[in-house]
Length: 90
Image 1 (cartoon, rainbow, N blue to C red):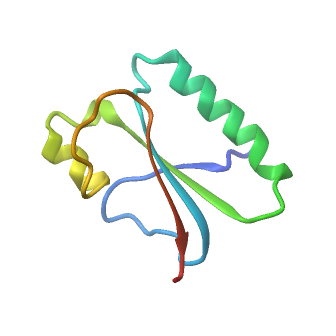
Image 2 (tube, helix red, strand yellow):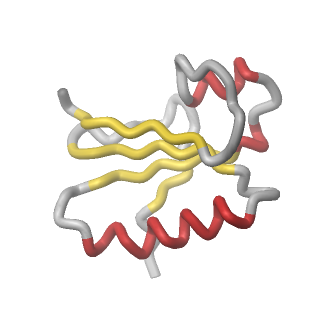
């Protein structure tokens, strides 16, 4: 089975058109985040619109500045997952 979710880091390519969802998850300790990723992965093929899902592990972020490398402008992380959704190519 091919996953529709892509592990992403700052500097990696970003899709140039369509919809993009970037998710920061607590993969090492939040089972609910992993279940959400499984549900998203199952739902994506049935959608009519093209959507690109990138994900990163918040455990790699030690400080708020580290998180801002992934999601510039985020002010404070309170709970996972964190999301950014946007239309690419605009």
